[in-house]
Amino acid sequence: FDLATDIPIRAALMHTGIREWVLALAVHHHAVDEWSFPSLLGDLSTAYEARLSGHDPDWEPLPVQYADYAIWQREVLGNPDDPDSLLSQHLGYWQDVLADAPDESTLTLDRPRPAHPTHAGEDIEFTINADTVSRLREVLDDHGVSMFMAVQAATGLAISILGGQDDVVIGSPVGGRTEEGLEDLVGYFVNTLPIRHRFAPGQTLAEVLASARNAVLGGFEHQAAPFEEITRVLGTERAEGRNPVFQIMLTHQVDNG
Image (cartoon, rainbow, N blue to C red; front, side, top):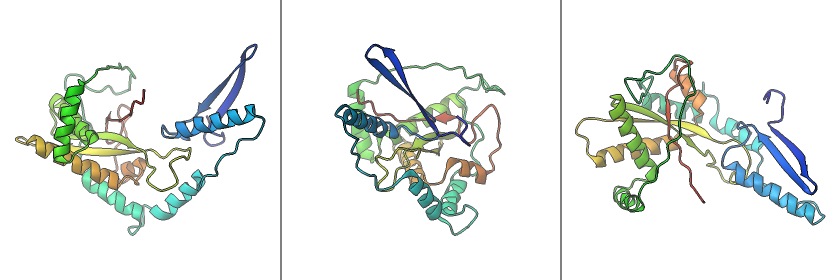
């Protein structure tokens, strides 16, 4: 896709058999996030069923369009260079939180990051025992901590131990659909938050969880600041071999299977 000129979606209907057709869709991630797919596929299903019945699809009109959201975001957040704007206040939070953060959070000291990315990798799958998860939820409920916050803390601790660091930044995407009327809207709303974890000798488990809770809640409260603006105000040095601000990403996905 040439995003300067192309519509970021392409469709092709292919005749694959005597009575069989396949609809292929190619969509640029710039236009559709994970949350959008149920709405997109639901609209296709509604349209298909309507055409089979010989009439036009009867969609309920959405209260807003993506263009409305983009305009609203620009008007409400304001100019990042205006110290009184909401966006400037959000960016001020990230400047304070990420001040003097490490340029790189590394997993292992004996395998330095290459100057140029190799894109080599591997998927490792494992399952946590259901009894362990159940007991963990009880402990987290006692501390007022969500599972996501706990996994943030556990990931940060693992990186700290493996990489010999007491200061770790982990990137995590957020849905970005914080306003009413955006639930069924197809579009890209996702933003990425750099969550910072700092550890100290002698910390108790309760203290680690409380720190992770505060870091995540603070990030969510200021999630309206686009990640590219965060990197801009931080003056982060760009390097080909690593992502700016964070190099480890933690995502959460619900399996409905």
